[in-house]
Image (cartoon, rainbow over all chains, first blue to last red; front, side, top):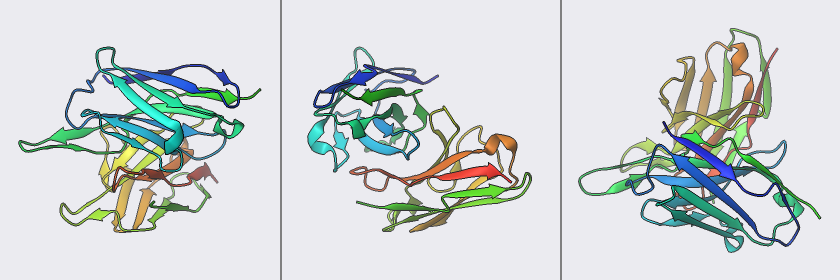
Length: 128
Length: 114
C-alpha cells in the first residue's frame, strides 16, 4: 500500500525559503522508473506541477519556477525534500507530493510522469 | 511548453445522463514510436487530493467505475461519464506527460448535478 504525507510550515514570510518534506511508504525510490513529484494548488484554482525526482536522481522542474526550486531525495529515510526560495503571497497554495509510476524492461527503465498516488496535501500560507 | 485547454469550465448534468469533458493540447502528445498518448485524467472532490482515473488517454485505473472512459488521440481528448452519479460531482483535470520536461495540467472542469 503506497502512502505519502507532506510536512512543513503552514506559514512562511515573504522572501523566506519554504522547505517541505514528503515521507512515503509502500515503494522505494531505488526502484527503476519510479519518481516523486510536487504539485501545488492555490485556493480555488487549478493544479500546477512544480518538480519531479526520479529513481536515478534525475530531476525536472517547472520552467517558469526553475530558478527558485530544488528537489532531492533521501532513500534511506524514504523522503523527498522540496525547497522554494524567495516566496511571495502568490505562492500560497496547498502543496501535494505524489508517486509517479514507471517500469523496466531488460534494456531500460521508463518513467510514466503522471501521478497515481497522492498525499493529502499541506496548505502553506505566505504572509507577513 | 505544451498548453492544455479544457472545455467547458463547468457543466451541469442530470443524474443518469452523460457528461463529456474535452481537453486539447497545443501540440500532439502521441508518441508514434509506441503509439501511446501521454495523457492522464484526474478527479478532485472538495477537500481531497486528485485521484488518477485514466492514464495513456484511455486506460482506466484499477477500481475506477466503468462509466468513466477516455478517448482521443494526438491533440484532442475526451473524458466521458456515461451515467452521472451523485458521487461524480467533482473537478476533473487532464494532464500531459509527453516530455517530462514540463508537465502541464488543464484548467479543470467542474461537474455538477442539474
